[in-house]
Length: 221
Image 1 (spheres, one colour):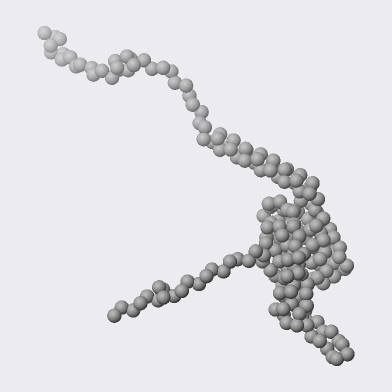
Image 2: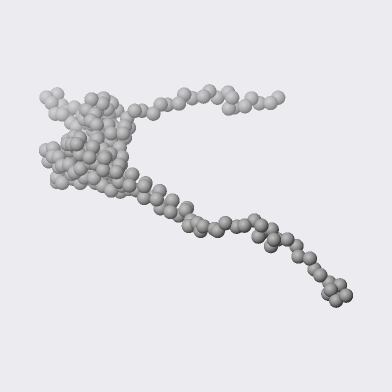
C-alpha cells in the first residue's frame, strides 16, 4: 500500500502579517526603589518604533518584568510619534538641539553615504527611514535617553520652506542629467550620411549587358 504524502496532510500555517512599525530596544536598566518596607526591583525600558517612511516615536516605561516594561514603552511610543520630513536623498538642512546634558547635530549627506552616526542617533534615523545623513553628539553626556530626546527635538526643527526648495532644486538637477544623457546617446546613434548622386538606370543596363566575342578568322575572310 502506498503511503500518503506528508505534504498533503500538513496544514498550511497562516502567514503572519508584518507589523506596521519596527521596534528597537535602545536601553534597558534595572531600577530599585527604596521604601519603608524594603527595596522594590523594577525594569525601565527605552523603546523606539518607526515605519522607515518618515514616522518614528519613542517611549520610556517601567515594569516589574522586562516584557511588561517593553510593552508599556511601545504603547507610549505610539502616542509620541512624529513625522520626519526628508527628501528621497537626504534631510533639507542642518539642525542642532539640546536636551539637558545631551546635544545633537544632524546635517545632510551626499547620496550613497548612508547614515553616518553612532549610538542611539543612528537607530532613530534608521527607523525614521532617512537615506543619507551625518550626525554627531556634541554633548559630553553618554546618557541614551537624553540623546534620544535631543534627536527627536532636532528632527522637529526642519523648515517646510527649505524642504520644498531642496526638492525642487534636486528635481531640476535630475532633469538636466537625464537630458544630457539622452543627447549623448542620440549623438552616438546618429551617423553622418553622405548624399549620393542620382544614378541613370540606362547606363547601368549598358554596363551590365553581355559583350559578344568576334572571331578573328571570320574577320580576315
